[in-house]
Image (cartoon, rainbow, N blue to C red):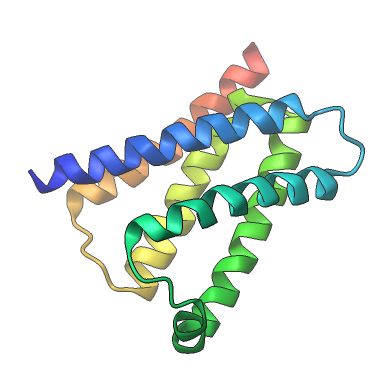
Length: 146
């Protein structure tokens, strides 16, 4: 049952990501990607601020004071992600998402999850990493042969 919750949340995130990728791809004619990103972040901020009261107390100051470094690091990460997404999808297309997904497996699951946070990693996880790396190879072959 625990896996069902993880899959549900992954599906929600993947759906949001697909919507995000659609918007990024449709913006391919935008000369300055930073302007597009500022506008999308602004829309996201308004929607997020609207949702805040539904999740309980909104102690922005206290949460920032207790978590300012993770907030700054995460903000930097979102900026880098937005730039990477915009450049990837506007220049190469949504089909190249597979590269992001697999590289994300390596950077997030392996580096952050296993090395930084010492999360569980077993032989089945190793096989999934090998499959992910194989996916990049197969995608690259598809691009060359396609």
